Image (tube, rainbow, N blue to C red; front, side):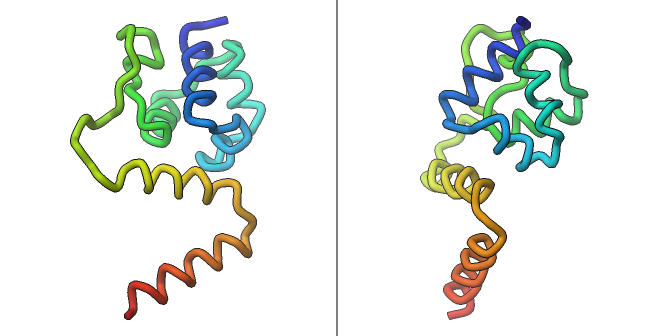
Length: 111
């Protein structure tokens, strides 16, 4: 195992995000994500940044430079939890469900 793989696995568990959902969200191959989690390969810097942003976790923590996980931004944002929940849910939706959400939001914003 690797520090990165162990920590990625733990953050995915804590965020209730599957490897498959992470792969889909970041447009990665599932086998690549699985190889990161299992410590076989490490992601590129670009992919590390995308993982960090999606999971809202410091890359320093993921690669073992800091002992405690911390969010990217420690700014008080009353909508952050809702936005992250919606984003995680969106990843697992079908195309029809995604279209329905987009149509709903568009109709609300246009009012």
